[in-house]
Structures are given as structure tokens and as C-alpha cells.
Amino acid sequence: MPPIRAQTLLSLPVRLHGIALGRPIDLLLDPAELRVVGFDLLCGDEIHRFLPFPTAVISENEIAIRSPLVLLEEDELAFYRTRTSSLAALRGQDVMRGRRAAGRLVDVVVAADGTVDAVVVDDDGREERIPVDETIRLRPASRSAA
Image (cartoon, rainbow, N blue to C red; front, side, top):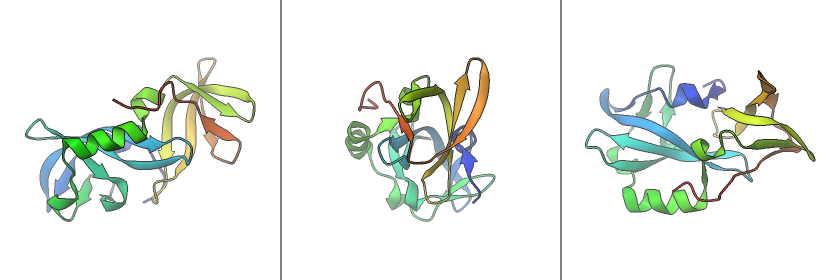
């Protein structure tokens, strides 16, 4: 998988052997490590579940899983929500490049291994894609995604 924008990831259905199970509604990120931990998934039964990023097989038209056992129930999702930041909560927050604000976060670009490859910021009305390096920091408004 080439690096992909989160907005594209969040538009893909989650399927098991071709059967649609639900859709991702948010990414849960470790903002310090700049890595995707997993997805907040809204399943067909209207229950939110956690899908760990490493268990997902991402293609251009779906996020496939190989077993329903990789979907963690709401209490496990709550555990991850308290230890990560949701992309939804990070959007609109300042992205720091060194000691300066580079703009407000619009989206992230995710590599195949779950690392954030780039951030997309709004810089005075212009969208700019900034490759991630050691100077880039996300500043969550709150640690919790709940």
C-alpha cells in the first residue's frame, strides 16, 4: 500500500471475505510516535468496535480483515480511546514544526506500517502537505478521544 490520506482510509468499507462488516469513522493515533494504532469502527449492528491497524489489509477499495476475532468490543475500544488521540480531535489543532506552528491539521497521510508519513495542514487558506520528520509534533487538545 502506498501512503494514503486518512480521509481516503475512512471512506473504505471494512470487509471479511467480501462481506461488509462496517465502516471506519475515526483513526486513533499515538501523537507522540506519529503512528496509527487502529480504527474506531462502526459495525452493521450499530456497535463501535476497535480494529487494530496491524490486523487490517488495506487495498484501494476496502479494508479487509482475515478473522472477526480481530475486532475488539466497546470496552477495548474505550481502553484505546483513553490512551490515544482521535484524528477527529486533532483536526484543527496546531501542527508544530520545531517551535513554530506550521498550520492547522487537516489530515494525515499514513504509510503501510501505520506511521504518519506526512501531515496536511491549512496554512492561511492553503492546504500544504508536510513530510514528517523529527521536528513535526501534533498538539492534541486532549489526550482522550472519548
